Image (cartoon, rainbow, N blue to C red; front, side, top):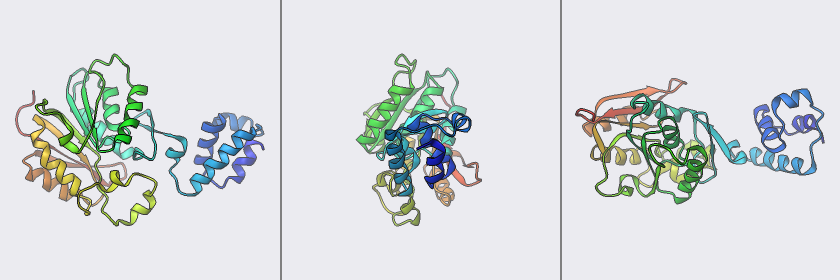
Length: 281
């Protein structure tokens, strides 16, 4: 079978078909345009057909390929972690805007999953001391794989500390406070109609353990954050399209100041942030 023939008959979106041909058959878009009659080997055809079946069943392309780009970096992903979304890059942007390029800020990522947020920050700010927490040991194994692949061993700020546990309770006692706390926590309500379209992704990362209204885990994070933020430190949380007002109220009730919400590129209120009072170090 030639490449053009497989592409014409696979019944996939063009972008998905091209991604499979690139990753499985080693054919770039340019080479396919130049040589559409490239012959595909039997093994490649079998792998392409299997991947196409998975996509037709609704499995995300990132799981089929085993990776997803985030903040210009190639992150390994598996069904143990959420597929990183472009809107989550807002959290990385926020952190970088509040850190000196060569500063040794302490940064905490709660619910790190694949490590996308924590490792993107660590990559862009080599001197930062980065911690990442997740309740899933399987997710942390993926994050550790990504840390090894994406960060130098002699990184100035040291290797990111990957810790298994329940939000702040996972952290060691008597540890220094953080300059920035970031989180893309579970914020989908139990029974939400959108969960069907997310059935391949880990339910724990979508819904969480506490409550069912989509805000329970955010409440826990906000309640604990003031005790772990340095004076002048920032908390930034990703949330659902209709949760901004509720999250702002939580941050204000927790005593944070300069509370605000930032929309994503689609104009949807997506990230809410606040600062612990006091002068930064």
